[in-house]
Image 1: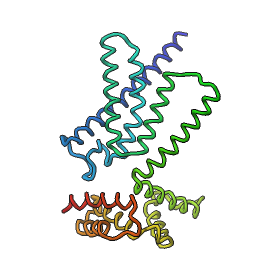
Image 2: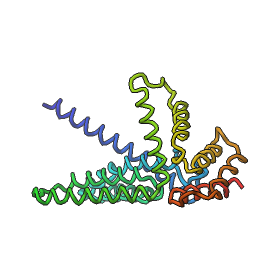
Image 3: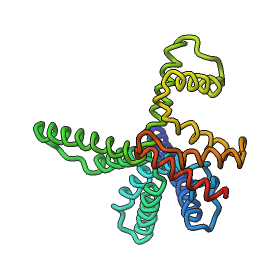
Image 4: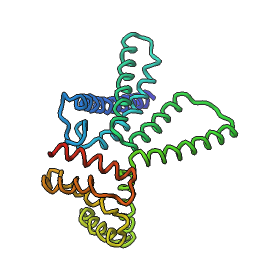
Length: 267
């Protein structure tokens, strides 16, 4: 019996230690990102104000979204304590949560917003359980479904160009899988095979390109460290900025905004 209790206490201790270690790493990332945001530390990518130790804000926001519910749960645990030292720990976890919440919107990552919101709501629901009658439960599920659909539409139009790029990647990838569902294309060959598949897709679907998207991709490619080519990047960016689109969509406006940032940096 005593051995079982020791094993349980050891398991709980190691679980808490692991959670605190993750929260400490997330706090370090958040503090570093805040210093980058205010110019005290350099960002790791010239196009973004902050990245933490990552190369762009996307992975950073994903990491923070993963740590936020852990910190929130610890805040709930220490919130019930009464000693002054324990209250200080509670305030510390609260400040960490607040720091994460401040940085997540600045990272402009919709996936991180969704994951942080859903996981945090789960933590709150576990801390404040309540019994709901079936009719109310069905009504709440319907309202939640409508809110989810509305949020999905809003998030799609919030960064339409980014969302459509991902949809295009998924569509081409599913076609690649359909071509070779069993044998695949070989180890570490996705990048090269995907570019061939994308070229074939653009040839067979010229309307998908819109005459501007390839130039946008090339401009960003020529700004990367391994493919840095200043004149070519400027030329492709100017095509995106000054060529008349068939339809002036929010995706075109977003591409032009990014190209304007590139031109201002490299000029």
